[in-house]
Every structure is written in structure tokens, then in C-alpha cells.
Length: 216
Image 1 (cartoon, rainbow, N blue to C red):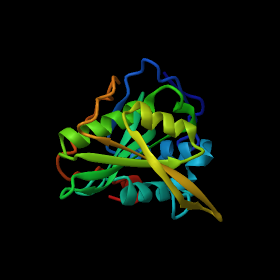
Image 2 (cartoon, helix red, strand yellow):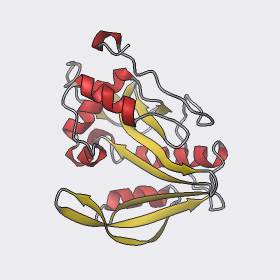
Image 3 (cartoon, rainbow, N blue to C red):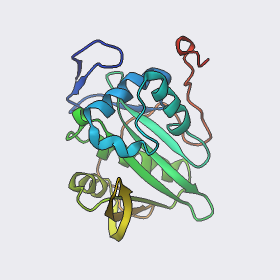
Image 4 (spheres, helix red, strand yellow):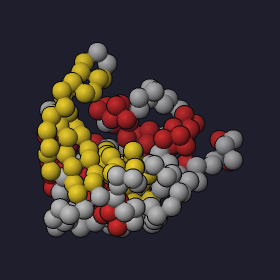
């Protein structure tokens, strides 16, 4: 269960035990801004998800979601929801239908990690990519020192394919990246998929309007 430790709209903290929890995937909405802010505050390693700088206000987080956590023809993002609270994201980008390829990615707030949600979410987005979008090959990458992300990728059926040297730069430091890939022909991992409330079959823009923030 997710337990809200503080009720403050932006500063609430959610401690989650996701084992056996009925999680689901859905598009991001404006009301997820406090949960997104909380994920950033409690999980400093997620700063790389905000290349333009970490938003500082709820309005900034809503604007970030409207620009980056949306679905279209070449990109899809779905929030991982546990007990009504967004605890992570799983997505596809660089979707290319000529060669039927795409790039998969995922992240979880610190309090939701270690219970299989990232693996289930990644396996789910891969299944949607193959069955609804007609893709043939999905790729992803992680820093070579990120053993947890490597386990998630491997368990979700993404096979390691090699090291790309010094591919990423965070601050002044560069990192080697291990690339993984999964083909539609590969064995399907025995993983319980996360139910979702939206199809990826066509472009969909989530409702990110917030009349109370002047964004309607």
C-alpha cells in the first residue's frame, strides 16, 4: 500500500510497498505535479530526467509534463500509478515505423523501487510497442555502473548488446553506456504486465489543464 506521510500538496511523501499492489499505467495529468515534485525531491538521481533543469514550482512541473511527458506519433509516456499516486514513468521515444524501431526508458521514485514495478512497466511498454504500434526492435541504455537498471532490462527480456563508450555526459563527467535490445521474435519474459487505461495505437494528449493554475 502507498501511505501518505504528509498531506501537504507538494511536499507529501509516499512510502510504497508495491508487492501485490494493483498498479496501473495511464497518461500523466496535471494533478500528478505534486507526485512528480516528490519523486524529484526524494530521488536526487532522477535529475538526469530533467535536462533543462529541475522545475521549482508546481506550475513548472505541470509545464514540464505538458512538454515532455506526453504521447504523440513518435513518443509515448505513461505514469506508473499505485494507489492513485504517480510513482514512476515508462515510455517510448524515437519511434520509427520504416525500420519499426524505438527507444524504451523508465524511472521510479526511490520509495517505489525494489519491488518489480520497473520490470513490469518495461515489459508492459514493450508488449504495447510490439502489439499496438507494430514495432520490431526496441533499444535502451544505462550507465555501466547502474546494476539495478541492468537487472530491470534483463528481466524484461532486453538482451545486452555492447558498450558505447563515453556516450552520456552529466555535469562535467562522461559515462559509458551498456545498450540492450529486445526483438518481437525474442522469448516473452514470464512477467505480470501492468494494466493500462489508454491505448498507444494513436496520438493522445493527456489532460494537463489546471484551471486553478491558470492553464485551462
